[in-house]
Image (cartoon, rainbow, N blue to C red; front, top):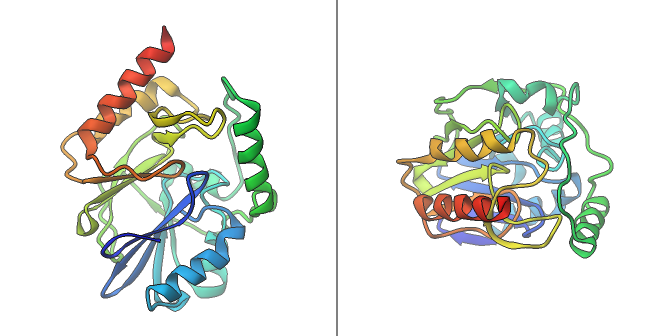
Length: 241
């Protein structure tokens, strides 16, 4: 679906992938689950594009529900896949973390696991090659994505600021729908390696001018950065009481 001119989303509020459409080609932000490949092809067609127009994939981090079809793009179509150097091993399947699940609700958790299972989440193909990136890098890809280090969810979690589409893509640095409880609204994301560090990292977004804040899970936010950071801090404080 088109969110705004040159800004598209596939997937849903369980697992989302974003596309930046520029004259020189398309940048894919995160690669969701492998079974979302047909949605990618359909959305590209709706944009008047094909997979040959994809110039690069940029991952917000290396978890399996964000790398889904990235290796297919790399292997079959020569598309480079960029990931922060601290998450490169994670994206290649060489290491993983097992953070606690925290509070869950059966219905919401079952919906997440069912969707992931039927959309390729149980057969993720890890990357065999990645292009490492660092905090502050501006990538030579459509939209000129700028990388903002957001450690906490994982060591190599990043936000990706694309001024051309007035958006910052935040992966699991935050969420607007908790996949394990179904709670909606801005809040810290589950499955986070270091929740305190993730919360502190939100202020790495201070000064980022973007109306759209786009998480990997949950509905798109169109209220700007300061408002969502404030809402998440209030949610975290409330949950700690």
